Amino acid sequence: QVQLVESGGGLVQPGGSLRLSCAASGSTFGINAMGWYRQAPGKERELVAHIRIGGSINYADSVKGRFTISRDNGMNTVYLQMNSLKPEDTAVYYCNYIRNYLNYWGQGTQVTVSS
Image 1 (tube, rainbow, N blue to C red):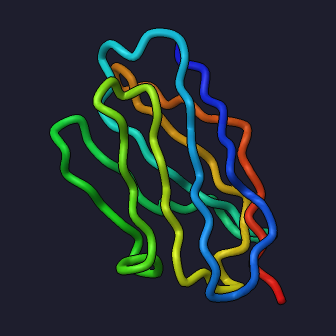
Image 2 (image 1 turned 120 degrees about the vertical axis):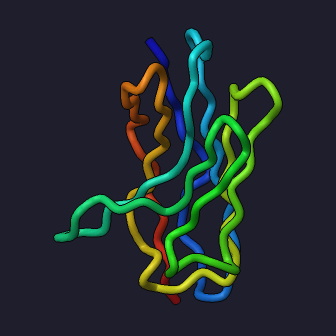
């Protein structure tokens, strides 16, 4: 089992920045990948960014050049640095770990971009 707790969400003005953190507890042995998804009201959950155990990274086209995913060496924490935020980035952001090819999810943290 992996337990995930997100933090760092909030209200920010367009053009601002936020940094999300996701702390993992429990066994991280067998981690395949970790990342961030988001879900806006009335929309499906979508991938924002994820990083594989070998270090390769994927970003959604909509966030390339603005968001940066990173993790600590122990794979206990994954971060999402979000810059140049736009109103369309407003969503609940979920941390995701894949361990032994099973998905684990955090409870989500709200990010609201509004003036």
